[in-house]
Length: 358
Image (cartoon, rainbow, N blue to C red):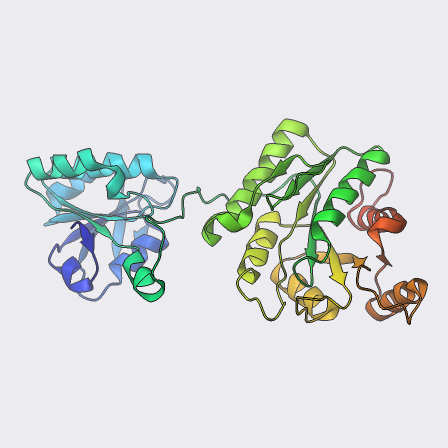
């Protein structure tokens, strides 16, 4: 097998030239007993700078000649597969062993590279994602690492509204869609992103199941969706549907998904959905979710979309809206009873679009 699963195995390949002067490169250099004799990075701003007690270079052949390196460690992120292959081929041709990260150079997809290493009598190894451990625990695991998207760092040019909630099935998808529809009706050009495969009702510009992605890919998927809409549609405002909740009890698994969507959306404003007397979820509450959202991202919750499906009739709906507004100092409305206009007004007043100046 070509997997590396221990530091002791890495030590046998000392000394190393490390490709990639980021978190992966630093982490690799800090392994006990691993000796780094040089670093390379394609980023010209990094070249010539000191990194882990070495000066960052740009030229592998020169560094190989001027050091006693026996191996190269390729520690590049997702999205840098082209550079990873380039350096692997170059290193093998120089007679150097290669240790790669599965993120940048999954060897099961590069059998020709393995054959090339064998022909040059050098070792080609990959740091394992240890999916075998997951399989031993649960009896099943993905066949390969599921982290595949490039790590975007994109700042939206368009005002973004995140539609979050206190639980699953509390009205996020419906609220997102109707906000988009109402924005159209008042003359805005909205973009609507659904992060669930059930986002089939119009208006929606993009829908995909964020929960099918690696949690490391979710933020990039949302950023990429925003970037795509900006380029293709030039929207005035973009609504992003959230999933689950940051605080819901009883079902912790989607909470990380909710956080990843929020981070990827980078919203200017947020609408929070809440369902009263939820029959099969355990929301903590509106106040806790507002605090969690605003602590995680520099956004402001500007309105509450109330789902009245399980509303107890001992209190009038009007009183419920008034009580929420008084308690949370935010407009609260039923999205099916004219609430979209109320919430959209709160959004436009806060972010300043259309005829409103912030």
